[in-house]
Image (tube, rainbow, N blue to C red):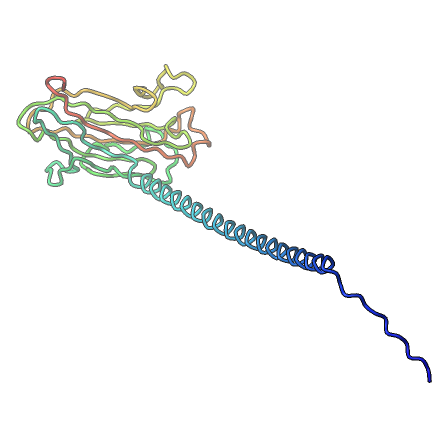
Amino acid sequence: MPFRKKNKQVDAPTPEEVAKLGHKHEVEAAKDKKSSVYEHFHAQEDAKAVAAAKKRKRRYAAILIGLTAILLIMYIISMLTTQWGDLVITIGDLYDGKSIMLSESASFDDAAVKLNGGSVKDVTNITKAWLPKGLDGAKTGQHNGENYLAYTFFLKNTGDKDLKYNTTMTITGVSKSADEAIRIQIYRNGKDNTYAKSSYKNRKVAETDATAWNNNGTVLKTLNTDLKAGTMDKYTVVMWIEGNDPECVDAIRGGTIRSQMVFDVVPDKKPE
């Protein structure tokens, strides 16, 4: 009978070994948990970064849309101003109960405190000699011609007192230095004067064919002392680009100019 092999006796683990084994499992479990938390944390951070990036994109898009809208509005306003407001006539200050009004007709059926002289587009340079005769004649309101603006209106003392008034004309907008070659002819009751910006080379010297502006942006400022109660003054404003001006060069082609005339009653006494 063959001998049976004796089974090898396995010693029972000691309490210390059991404790070490439990600690090992706890450590491994802790490592697994830490790894899981770490991965979860990074997932959260990635999600936050993506959300923040989307938020920034939305904010930038909103800013871009807002800026585009503002630029569009400014462009529209600019176009409207250029098209409709090249010559604006208004009444300014009134004192001592005195009153003046404006109208495009001598009957004053359309009396107003503001008139719009309109504009003329796609002009090229001409010279004063080319203007038609009688621009201060029978036509009233806007009566532009080829390459020039012409506007006739009336100013009336609608009160019961004689008065004095100031007339001030200013350039309110210009592009491409178009004002360097512009001529502005103003008729008052049939008498006219032509105004131009002073010489580009010497601002103290007037152009040979015109009276120099008062300053860089003010065409004229005059005092009218003889407007009796119930009477009126007739004005015609003519504007063109003077081809004989030394500054009438290609650089101003496509330029624009806007102007304003303001009439202010002069008080008998200076307001306090």
